[in-house]
Amino acid sequence: MFSNTQHRGTVGQPNLGPGQPAQHNQRLNEIFDTLRAEFESQSRGSEQMETQVSQQIQEMELIRNKVYQLEQNQLKMKQDYEAEIRMLRHELELRGGAPVQTHLPGPPQHGGPSQAPPPALGHGQGTLFSGIMANQGPGGPGLAPPPDQQPPPQQHPLAPPPPSGQPQGPAPPSSFPGYQQGPTLNGYGPQAQPPTNSPGPSKRNIANRGPGPATPQQHPGQPQPMPYQTNPGASPQIPRPTPPGNDMQVGPRHQMPQYSHQFGNVGNQLADLEHEHLPDNLKRVEPDWFAVFNPNVPRTLDVSLVHNLVHESVVCCVRFSADGKYVATGCNRSAQIFDSQHGKKVCELLDDSVVDKDGDLYIRSVCFSPDGKLLATGAEDRRIRVWDIATRKIKCSFDGHEQDIYSLDFSRNGRLIASGSGDKTVRLWDIDTRGQIMVLSIEDGVTTVAMSPSGQYVAAGSLDKSVRVWDCSSGYLIERLEGGQGHKDSVYSVAFSPSGRELVSGSLDKTIKMWELTPTRGLLPNTNASNTGKCIRTFEGHKDYVLSVCLTPDGQWVMSGSKDRGVQFWDPNTGNAQMMLQGHKNSVISVAPSPTGHLFATGSGDMKARIWQYGPYRPHQEVR
Image (cartoon, rainbow, N blue to C red):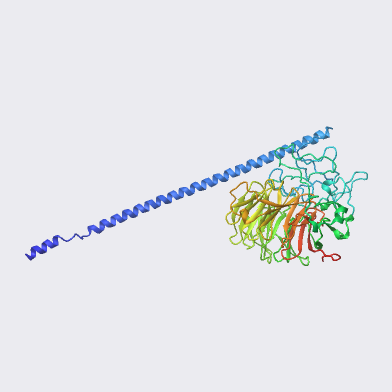
């Protein structure tokens, strides 16, 4: 019985032989094979997707290049058409026909040697720097003088004097070319032409450079033709607003009845004042510069020349270091750094690797890093160079812009550089990674950029008359300042206030505007296309294009430089002009305040940069 029981117990035990684990392993391998196949399938799908994305990117790049080529072809056809029209018009005049009033540019209106205009920005009629530093160039659409009266030819400084008996332009009353009375151009006398090494294509052949809009010819006493009325495709123009006159903001404590009665309420048109007829307390006259002060507001400022920095070419830009000890200038082929206290040149930064040793290569913008160890330069060759000032060597360079670079600015932390170019982009570059981190594209050429004091925002002015503000971290467009209260022509300069809550802009329309940029107005993604910001002040008084604007470090004054050769100080609270300084013989292309003291610098087409000092006015005591 024991044996049977044992047998039955043995029969009832589960089968644990080698066959069962083998089945489990086989199932596991099947699962692994399935997962491997799925992974490989997904990998192939990912590769295919990446290939498709790459192909689409290449197709988009091809389309972009095609559009660019079409744009270039259209521009060339337009230029050929205009050249043919000018040739036919000239031939008609040679045959004795009556002059034809046309919207096309006419011949240069100076008697000196022919000289190519400075580099242009963008496409079409809205171009930058054309005729600004040279103060000449073909007239823009609708800007030709009336056919029955041509302005007198301007004498080139290097050309021989005209024969006796030949009509000449009105001569200035003194060695300093001040504003003239009578039917002169734009309210001031003829300006001397710069030498042949002023910015221009010269031996360099860069595409998309054409004549820009010339200064409108203003003849007192004659009716003015409405600009662009024969060319519907040109930029719309409106009559220039009447400068502040009887409604100028002068309260009881600002009234100066004795001067208001004597000189009239000139408003902000300080260029209309003749310093010879002003009392001593409303002017300061030196051998090669003078300043006049608004007779309708109390004089609170004085000014003096500290240093005269002579260059060998046009000075396109000036900028102080953060500690105010140095000032940098940009000119042909080099950037130069001067000691602001003594006026001595500290160093000259010249890139010896440039292949073309003879052609022009103008430095359009310079900017110190916050620690003062680096200087960034932007040039016509579309390259940003970041110099180590101590070693005078290039630390790094950035390539990517497709046209000339016109403006640069460092962020406060010294890590980012913002750049603006004629290629219609604002770009942000990282000094640490030495790479491009953001491209912000707009509809027209970028003339100027500025970083906010916090480094959070970047603003840009453009040929399309707009001012834009982006968030640097997200790339969101948070403000677009334009429209009815905006500029009526291209914006050439922008600058943030020290608080970062306001922005000033200067334009071809001869005005400066102050804009409100407060948190209550957004500084968030601009999803409302009608949001055009709020213009809180318009400054009118310059006789010609406003080329550069800035605010003093304390925010007490707005400064502006103009093609009319003047620098003006404005009260941002009232919009009144306090002072007009005439210290250059050509356009004031750049103005910059010292961040630490009462100094400011100016750069001009007369091949000079100057350092000035401003301070409170004390009767019988001059600023030194």
